[in-house]
Length: 168
Image (cartoon, rainbow, N blue to C red):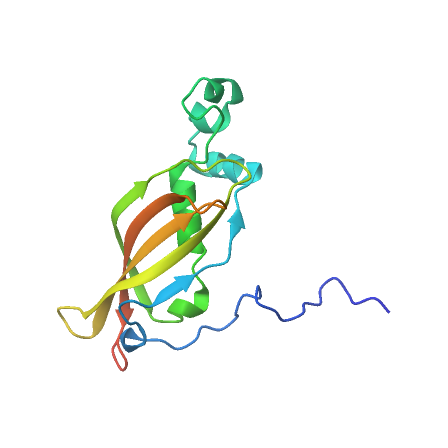
């Protein structure tokens, strides 16, 4: 008997349905997370252009892109940034995040092309209580690389997180 299409086997790519309980004390400077990899597709670029209305020809026009220094179309920088954020495992943050505070020093250091596979190495840089004390700030350095190991994006993301017993 064949298993139904709706059945799912548990495995490393299964997305958790409940968040793990985490707080500021669970984050430590120097902790490194390496994410799974994701291939950037033509569909990703087309969908992103449609979603954002960013139809700049470097991303959407083969003829134009051939005349640029890259020689072909490249993925939108904000798409690569969004994928980098999204690649972080949900269980790493668990339910600790109260808010995403922002990004410092975001740099796109190399282009990402259709067919490139990206992954992130994220390192907890700083963990500190907030001024009010009922929450804290975690800063994480992101290094996104392609399948050749070339850096394509670097940034520091800042998150407001709950403390054990602290409020939202």
